[in-house]
Image 1 (cartoon, rainbow over the protein chains, first blue to last red):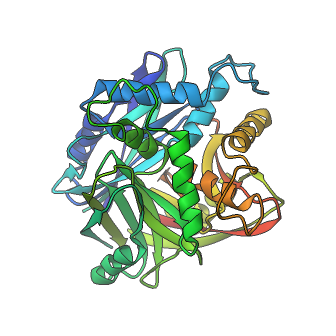
Image 2: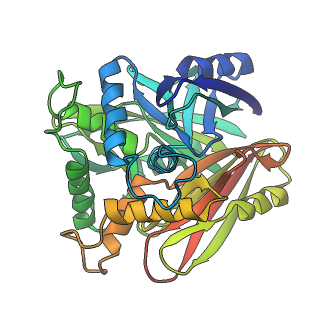
Length: 138
Length: 138
Length: 138
């Protein structure tokens, strides 16, 4: 049993979902760990993680639109000094996920057929997002 | 330290919450791992996980009704070719959980008194759902 | 590789977010584990976990107000025998998190600059909350 740490840096071009499934699998390949888990952890409070259908772009747009309506930019937030998209980004992060732990068998993540892992960017401006990966296993 | 993988297959009869606490504990018993964690991972994008009060069926019904109202079937979704319950199921999954990691001490999950782990089925039709379990410990 | 278990007991003074980042780091220090992960698990169904910006109290108040509006106390819940804040507390728990797994490198949690881990108390009355910590690594 051992631990392998890795780091992803994802450049985002504003709000939306960015698939990182292959980047995570690359880190698992590099670790040479065959059996265990990978923990994905987003090191930010205005972007988050989600697992999602990866074959239907329309489904992703529906998810994004749902969050635009549920947590609107124009609500009367007390914390608004960093722009109209700042406070909604923190709330959308709380409603989604910061960490996800995925099983690894035979060196491969055990995802369902249509399952992908996505970085969910909640800010309008481009950002460089840091995602920590920890592979534990044998 | 070692890794033990297991797989649950849960037959659902449509929308609702299905308790899987005992099935997870059975897999831990089988693993003979005394101290560590179990990671539960749902391999689908239209069903999810939730921890919930397991003694009050009315509370479960209130949770289910809340999600019916928050993510209604009759909203104007772009992705609607798989039926009115398809897109809401993806959004409800994003709002809940795909993985949960639970501590194991003395061979037992360290849940609170009223805490149970549930599969949250978001589709109307019966499905066979795959849930991956990874026990890591000693 | 080894496992270290610890337990936090947090006294809450009613609804709100309570930072537990330093308490978690203390348990990691005590474990002497240098590289791995820590899993934080809330053993309750009416309080939960969230990662959040820890420098802006106004942002925390906005998050708390958002949940007051999204899951109001005065909705027509079937399960209402434990008071008006009981059922909303279970729903807010489902919408946030019960477990979070955080990477440890060089004995330190790999959090982003403004990231803190918080217990999210959803009940009005003071409670003693049990949080289980599991450090796995080497």
